[in-house]
Amino acid sequence: MVRLRVSTVVPAEVEAVYRHVTAFGENGPTDPQKFQDLYEADIHQEGDLYVYTEDIRPRNDRPSDIATWHCTFDFPHSRYMAAVDSSWSHRRDWFRSDKSGTRWTVEWTTQQGLVKGMLQLIAFKLFTSRSLRRNMLQPVRQHFQVEFE
Figure 1 (tube, rainbow, N blue to C red):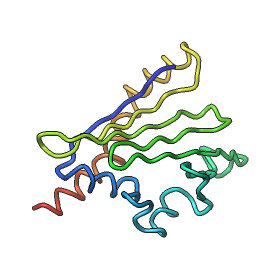
Figure 2: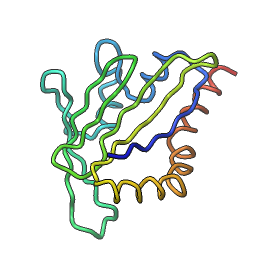
Figure 3: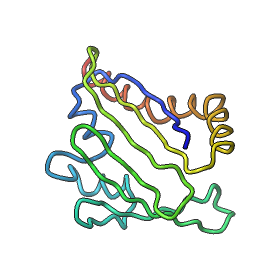
Figure 4: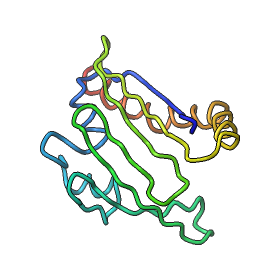
């Protein structure tokens, strides 16, 4: 399995970044509405797991493709999102203290074979990682930069 990774340093404490990114805190969801908006309205808890489904079709003109996700939260260290019965990649977010704030790392573990996984890695490095930095990581950095200026 191939691992695809992006990372950034956010100028804030680990706990604050974790809560902002995951909508989850020490005692569970920090804001039930934000939590449902982030993970889909049908999210529910089964023991330590939070389970939800998502339509993962690439475009609206395609047939529905429903994926089930199992999420586990380890506040304030990590979040793991496993794609159940799907070829979609599992995702893990890590939050670690850094001299400039919090190092937030997002890693996807592909469920493809080695050849397809290597092709995904090449496409990720050439095209996708830049978009993820701009659309996923940068807004979180900006949120905290504005807050601390």
